[in-house]
Image 1: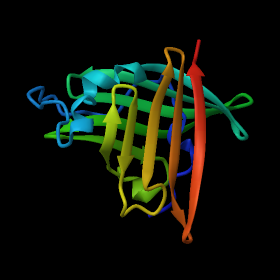
Image 2: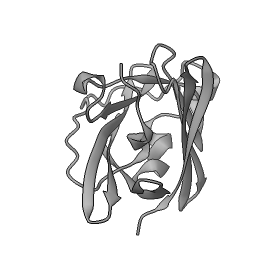
Image 3: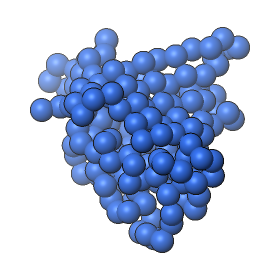
Image 4: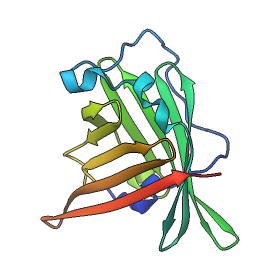
Length: 171
């Protein structure tokens, strides 16, 4: 698999082309006590438009609620007058698991990669996929109503690598 780059946290307000399971009978994640407080309902702070200044341009990430078991997002980068689509994302309840599922343009053969919630509280979610090349860990933390912090991390060539993305609400 190819490396998921910093575009992981960039988004657009364009149409949400991702589809989510319309089954609303799934219950919030309860595999562990920490997970019990973090289901789709507890992640509503993610909904909206976010932006982050990056060396490549201004990164945007936009999330909306598709239904009771799925949030959907898209990302893009604005560089000068150019808008570059980067990826689509899903935050999806699947049985007792909460999955973060990005599909990055030009990577992984256009296929989505699934990361499972391993730790969470009402203001933070940590998703992991130890089998993925990079990242193996994705973190979202709600700092204030108008700011959040996201990070991707994992090993590259045996060395731990982290990329951080402080974001503010896009106006």
